Image (cartoon, rainbow, N blue to C red; front, side):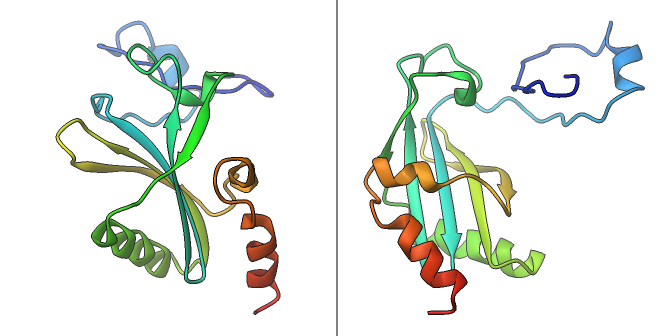
Length: 142
């Protein structure tokens, strides 16, 4: 997308017809992972906050970030997955990150991305009322 436009995820079946655009702008291609549960996980210090994304458009929506009616519920992430996410932070040399995961219908988790400055304060409305205070304590070294 151009400046000041959101670039949502879009399914494509071929690069034909996109040759000019591909020469002008970086893009990310990935395999389309079937819908299951989309999970946002924020980690800082020894704290982990995981939330499953709830959207009324679950069946037909590719990218939940464009749904204005999106909601979240706390989610108990498997400890093995949590360890792997913390290993990603360690490998990148960062101390905090917001991860986007998808767990397919068979229970297999897929890692999409980690953002070292990802949004997470909205979680205060969805089961983690002290997340902002806990992040401030983390920043202060407590």
